[in-house]
Image (cartoon, rainbow, N blue to C red; front, side):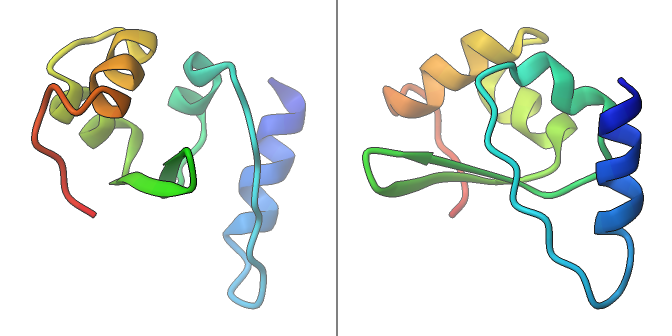
Length: 77
């Protein structure tokens, strides 16, 4: 959790861009960021963690991920 706070602080600096890759989607609920979900070379989602769950129609980020990569829900690019 402490490292996520450091990453978030760094990302908030105007001259900084942070790219973080994770398979632990639950961690992103603690980071104020814009998420980009890439799958098989295609952008499947761009938005906040909250929007990610809303678009995925669930409170579980793993299920939201599955729905987005399987295109079970409409999403914005």
